Figure 1 (spheres, rainbow, N blue to C red):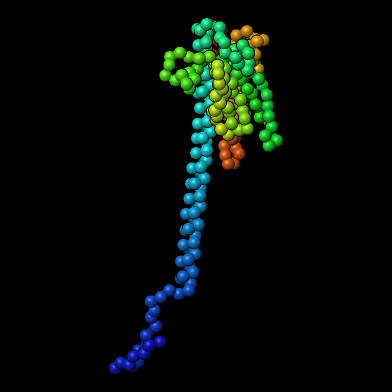
Figure 2 (tube, helix red, strand yellow):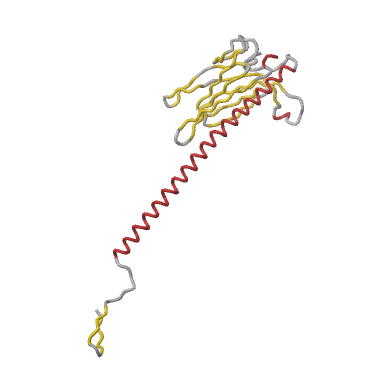
Length: 227
């Protein structure tokens, strides 16, 4: 304590300081720590939400690509009726116009549809791009591991490529106009004509949580009765 002598006596002054006490430092540190924790939790939550949105967007993208490509191939299949029926093309499925098989497979103890489909269509092979003359082609869709593979068998070569990744299951049903019902398989060698529509169901894995999303669409075949 500081003292100073005056005419009125001795005056005492309380000590002064410019620093912080230990308690003040601890309280400030605690507040900063809490704020950092809140900000970090908010940041992690935002990142997880963004990742979930991106993963869902990827699954929708896969489904759109698969449905679009299959519908495009089937539309070319419809146009085959306008051409001469004779063709020297040799395909793994002989002269069948459309064959759909109903199968299943197990992944991590779960059962998933593993259907395949093959049909004759028209296409422009890569070597003929830019020419107006289409070529006959045998197209098939099947699953390999978690990829949906499209195979195109031309006269002299086969072209394979992945249409969609992270696909766990593929299920296709066919609408029989004579029976007026959906059936699980189709074989043009046993059933006259082709189905009027196909119901396509995709089961897509949403990584990395291994969640599943199911997508379904109906692909119409308006010229089926002409084949």
